[in-house]
Image (cartoon, rainbow, N blue to C red; front, side, top):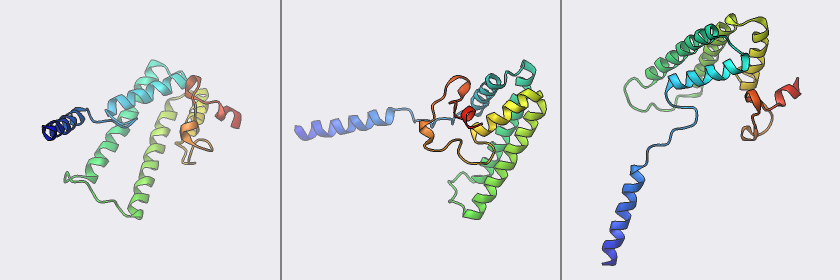
Length: 157
């Protein structure tokens, strides 16, 4: 009797564990939602007009679509690709940096001079300048205040 109860408990636990929805990693998910969050954050930081928001959304959507196509090319056969060698990974990183720089240039072209100066600060804070991590130390200790900034950026200038 005890064995039957034990087997039933284990089976029930297996069913409960498998019934849980899969966890999504932070920042991943629907590309349209990611673009929307990105634009809203940028609009808040730069005080964008509605026309500027629409254009920035279009630019970031095109970038997301290009990234999606690139990811589909990597695993075109549907199987998980093997880890590429270091040269291939370096080439991909350089290609991503070039695409980000091109996207940033398109966004900067839409901005006023004051907004462009704030956008440069925004890029440096977010790590899109290629300089590495935003601040010294652990990224998890990075506390955000108003406008998504911790205040360290203003102290560094």
